[in-house]
Image (cartoon, rainbow, N blue to C red; front, top):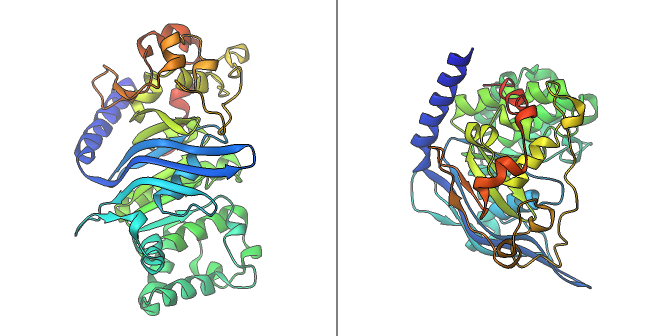
Length: 367
């Protein structure tokens, strides 16, 4: 079993190396702000981020960390009165890079379905209850000038790929489908125009654990069959660890740790990542080893000047409280980065030895 795990880790490392130079999305100094009566709320704080072509990357963080707003920024889908600033560049497989924030409304409509598509949490809110699932597919194809006959054949194939009875689902209304069936139908709809990138915002959060794992396994198969790039946003680190090639851990509106999944779960180097893992239930460890993260996340209207995790961090120093840390490489032989001045001391400050099984729970899901 150890040899198999090592081979899997090595294979994943090779895939990551191959993809690292092929960037499909790049974000530079991206921020999102909202004006409020008590001040300006900054819910994405100068994020720099890259997504590699044909990878699955998991963006993980607590509720309110800004991960969903980051996904909206990627598609220039921040609703007014929000203000989106920075550079968001999409690099198609062929042709020149696209400045997403400079696209017209008509261009954005095409971009959001034909290049990048998004799946939201809760399919019931995404479907029109008065229209059959077939009607949703046909309406989408017609709106983008796609051939309806060819498109519906693709719809049937996608639904079958997701282990659904295509004709039964197409003839059903949304309320006639279970939650798991609805979510899979929504995934199929999101892929009907053959986008290169699929952004998924907590797509399984409303489902039971068995259905979550089933959908993640099917998603892994879809990614390989259609050469998709998947950005998977979730609060559940162990669950997405079974799916993702890379993980990006988000805290207080910015990224804290980014790297190959194996590196992040086996050698978490930011105190927050380690605390997050320690707060996750683990059947292989005593209950008393599970510890909540003390304190609370900062107010987006009053973001601390230095490291935003400093008020909750056991190894914070005056440098942390006064100066914002930038990404630096973790010396573990992987493309693994962390925003922490004292990451080398994190393993002693937040001990994970008793919870070693946490990292492996998710790896069983689909890889």
